[in-house]
Image (cartoon, rainbow, N blue to C red):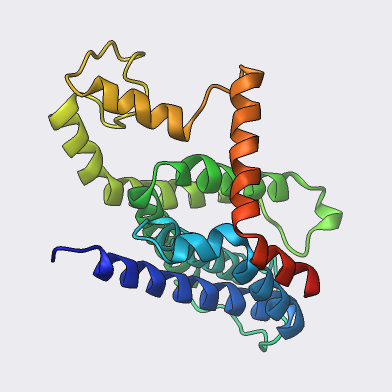
Amino acid sequence: ISTDLLPKLIHCGFSLLAAGALYQLGRRYLGRRIAAWALAWWILIPHVSYVTSTAYIEMGLSLWEFLAIGVILRWMESKGIVTPIDHEKKVPKPGDSIRWLVLCGLYTGWALASKYTAFLLFFLPLAGTLFFLALLPDRWKKSHFSVVSVISALLVIGVIAFVLVSPWLIRNAIWTGNPVYPLFNHRLGLDLPYQADAERFMREHASNLSSWRVFADGVSDQLNQLAIDGTLIVNLFIL
């Protein structure tokens, strides 16, 4: 294939699936009206509409993350922690709990294999949220939800996710000596022939926020992107 048409179509398909997953997630736990509003807000985010038409990976990443959130909530259902709105409450079957954790591990692994940022922007917040809920006073909980159960769940999720992402880490380690290339090359003492490419990637994706000028430039770039997508912003305000 000599063009990026097919990757764009695949990425657009991921966008549609992510939108469907978001709606189903909202409908189950918050009701149809809120689910519809969530879907509308998602579609009208300027960056979402822009990225959907590209051959990137963000929509695939969003799909895996939405699905992972959905199955972790199903796991919490099996523990009696949350209750769906539009569905009858069912008695958990033996094995339901581990099944949802395995699925969450698979989806989390695919998210991590798609992009490193899934670790910082999805897995760590997920772990933090579960620990926060476990540490709440018992009088605020619908059922017993302990730190031990959270640790066990995160171990299952983490091991499965690591197994799925490990082929990419091993490949990176063999090719570059850094399993998470292009991150942390300097800290690992690596001086690679393609170091310039890694440094350019870091400048574009992880600017040094300790410099207010760099941070201000990044904000300016984002505002420019919003201006480019001004038509969608008008639609958002009309909504």
